[in-house]
Every structure is written in structure tokens, then in C-alpha cells.
Image (cartoon, rainbow, N blue to C red):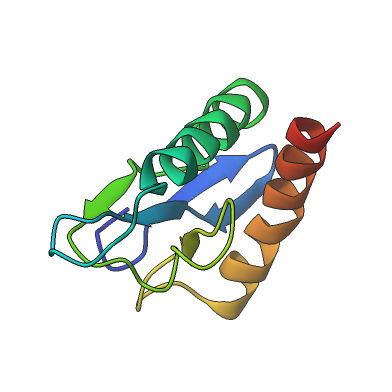
Amino acid sequence: MSNYSPCVKIGDEVVSQVMFVIGTNGGGLEHPNWQNNLKFAVKIQEKANEMYPGLFRPIILRNSRYNQNLADFACIIEVGATGNTLEETTGSMKYLAEVISEVMK
């Protein structure tokens, strides 16, 4: 695995890793609830670590808000990287969907 094709093996399948990018108010723009977005991302990632260890890369915090100030639980989820195949990236989505479904119950 490299930074250009971050993968994880789940069962017999190799899929892309996913990563949350959370915007903050560090760049000076108003984003008063960014911590709630971070808490949501942490909750998703913790469940993913229980269900599918290695599916997530570490959460990245940025000094931009990426319009994440416009709605509750607004997050960017990056899927794989430039070296991942389409099959690897679409393969990880079923696992991500299962994790989100569990958290939203």
C-alpha cells in the first residue's frame, strides 16, 4: 500500500481506504459548529474500526470550512487516492454505507 493507493483488505476483497476531511474556523471564517461535525466523524470512524478495521485513514482537520458550516453533520469523505482503481473505490462504499447505517440507528 502507498499514499497513492491506500487500501485495506476486508474479507477477500481489497478496497480503498476512506478519510474524513473536517473544516474548522481556523482560517478566520465563521464556523461555530465545526466541533459537532468532528464528533460525528469520530463516531462514524469508531464504529468503522469495530466493524471493518483499517477502512478509515486518520481524520484530517483543515483551516477552511468547505461549506461544512451550512448544515449539521456536513463532512467531506475522501475515497482512496489517485492510484486506486474504480473497483477499489466503489467496493469500499458498501462497507461505509453499512457503518453509517449502524450509527444512524
